[in-house]
Length: 323
Image 1 (cartoon, rainbow, N blue to C red):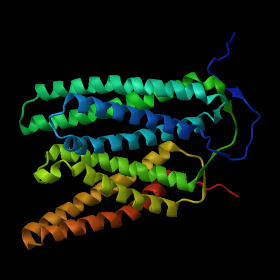
Image 2: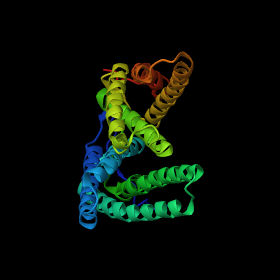
Image 3: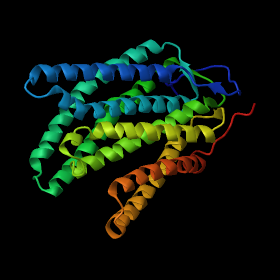
Image 4: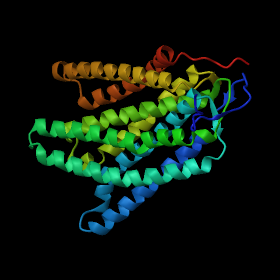
């Protein structure tokens, strides 16, 4: 004798027509960003009260890029996971989303405090364990990146998936494919490119340990990367928007992530090739380093457009909604 699954959603009358994305992903993004801002403000107040001797602006210039990156990752990750979950289980939404939203906000805030303390202790343990040689700094930087990504998953993604499962009984099941606006998909793709760029550049800066920045610019390296990432995000958005129709059948988060990964891989490979050519021109021909840096930035901007379209063509395979 089989028993009814208590977490199963109650079915509704099926509909074969494409359905728009529910409002739940946007509401959960608002909760995640609100809790993140609260945690950031509490961290700022705690640092300001406990360490009045050091310059607050210098400290803020170091940590602000990490906070902005975390906000981007949190918003994008919550929207991506929720949309993919609703599409996979063919859910039209939750009848009473308030308990889900409140529970996620509380769990998010508690985990941000707890995991922040634990990750800080782990980083200090790694710093004391490894020596001050280059290999030690390399392992410390890699370890800190792994700890950060693991903390992000445990703080943002895992509790969201568990709560979506827990409250799934109040969800509404429907039929038909999810219908997404091409603009929304383009923003998801562009933000994924920006987040990937910030992660790669953040790791590269930690490994270089400020070798290519003066003392005045070292603390602002993260801010400079944010500005660069914003420009690249706009290029990727307009490239994706030009490749996507007005309405797309299905979100297909895995395919969209594959498209972003292909684009980043092509773009990084192109950057490495350009860097090798720049090094040859600098050492052999004697071209001005400022001119080479300017050309390198322009070439990267130019390559991102075709690479974005190739990534979407190879990875996503657009399925437009038939009118």
